[in-house]
Image (cartoon, one colour):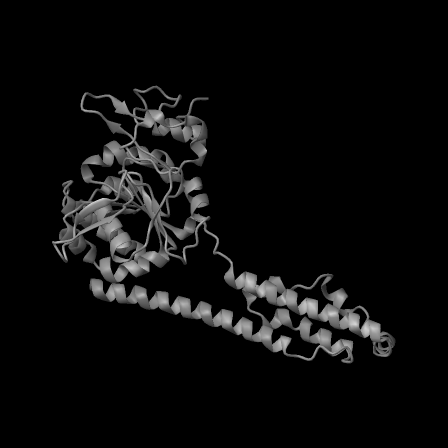
Length: 388
């Protein structure tokens, strides 16, 4: 299938899903307003009036049925429907007025329940997230092995590794989640953008609500990632991450070289997340392999190109979350008392061999130079290598 065909198929599926959702909500609203249009005069017999309300759970969409249960259940509906009591209500103006007020309140409650359901923010679970990890074959043994022993175990079905060559051993170890992008193994911007383009297109094909990108030198606190994304609505445009520079990046506008443009970007070394709503808006600009062309146009790396597309082209803003951490930070300055509230960690090795790693107690440095094993033990303590 050609990239253009895949892109069109994703767009059509997304539009169909949104149309189905809108139709469902509009149908439910129509049912509510139809019911509200009924006469509420107190002179109406109690039984027909209550029967109309009682029919709501059957006529409402299945997902909304639980919102239409009336206080007291079915017994409350049947209570007071005897012939003598019905006559008494008709003869007593005060009783009829009270019944009318109760009915009006009940209908308002039904409408409020529907509105709350129709406008509620979607809940986020691990299965809603597409996690991509950029790597290269020469780091499979050195870096992927550590990830597979730690946080990958928490999200094996949601995490995919994007590399540059076939590797039967790690294809097996990742459960078939190693994708050969056929991109160059170099660390040049063209190779980086090539892999990021494959990650983005794979996210679009997945139909997941969130895309979260990380590097192979990141430890991801999966439960906290899920909790954090739960605070944001994937049907809205969200670009979540952490900047690595103190001011917006300023570059020459390639469309008008006499102008300069500026924008923020989330550093890929700490990880970032993009909602499906924003991803679909990015698709015409960067989908189907177009991301590589955008990177070539501005002549900048992959994470910067993401920021360019989101902030400059689409005019959406980066939401900075300090819980993302990259190797560009000094890990020794992080507070190790609140690890559980952080989303990602990293490490790096200085030219003289000194490690920039989280200063956390645990395994010996010779066994755990990156401190990822010790972080995992501190957070979860369920691995055989964790100190007893």
